[in-house]
Image (tube, rainbow, N blue to C red; front, side, top):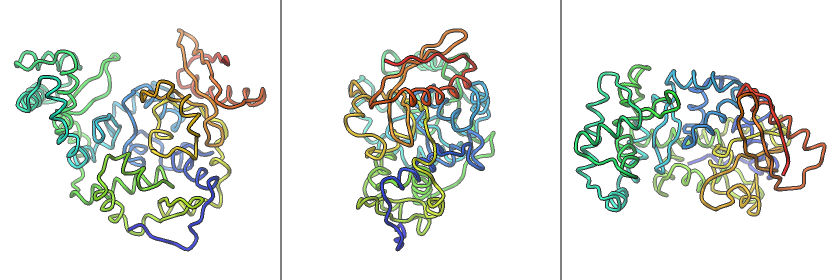
Length: 380
């Protein structure tokens, strides 16, 4: 189990500062050693990646680099996109992808029958689709999504409508395929084993080791956080959550944040005395689908319930990009691209003074630099 220490009492401010530091959003980033896409993926274990543009800015912000450089890093393949947990696309370390989809895919696969029935697919259809894709991609093949659907149709499995997405998900959840970087803006697919073997091969972990590795990486990058947040993030049962945390031993420590039990990596607690409010981050412009919010069920350290309604205005799971000050959400923003500029409209969720508006606009400059465009900011 996570270690209990005597000095475990943290204020909410302490916990938020430590959390921002661990999310690689503190005053100093790129953090030491976290200077590549592969290194960031290993640090986090998995990064939300259903929205590719959000993922790319999550990486670009932390690496202080451009979109073109992020795309080049992704093409190296040290980290890849697939559906390891909760039926949602994440960026994961290439060497861990197979064990992650094997262990974390158990529940989604077992629950997929109802979805197939709704779509008019059988288990035999799904298995045949995975087989067809395996054959078409063998030997270093790389196909766009549309080309993959054409392969299925030619093999007698309908990919019409939402069937195609489900069958592509199923093949990846089975560990047959994974998502390769986009080519000319189009999503592509490759064989998981071939892609990983060409980049050093997979790590061989048994089930409990894989669970423990995931817990350690979650709490080192997201902590302090409650157990239930880890369980929700990874899509684990209570039993597997307990196993995962126990596997980490003294590498994790229990802390109390204003009376709420949470867990942090033991090593990260050593950084706390040197951290400023909010990790010293000041203002940050974050994408909508970033681990900053997506990595937690309880987001009360960063935003209240009223603010969350502004971040997810339709309650439909689509997160707006956020402007964050000292670890707390202050506004949302949306962009419009022109050939030479990025136009950003900001929507305050709290009172933002004129001086703070200038600071917030300055926080958007790195995003414009990342896109290699001029910045234009307006406030709603």
